[in-house]
Amino acid sequence: MNHHHRKVLHALFAHPISANTDFKQVIHVLEELGAEIDNKSGNRIGVKLNGNAVALVHAHHDLPKEEVMQVRKFLESCGVTPEQYPL
Image (cartoon, rainbow, N blue to C red):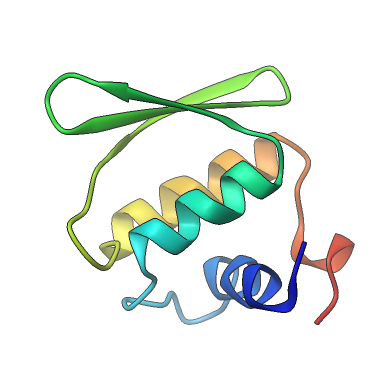
């Protein structure tokens, strides 16, 4: 995982919740972690990682705070933490 991907991963777990996390960058980080990305109907993206699955709403630019929380909880359920990928 390159430095830019690690910065995005740390931004997902940052407090307070970041409101300017780019959706495409989050998808790249998920792919780098080994996630399978699947386009679904209704402007949604399916993500499978480590036996867990989630459906995310495709944001045009930045993720809303609710989506950042959803991605954070999904990554935690998959066993991914920012401590595994230090800056």
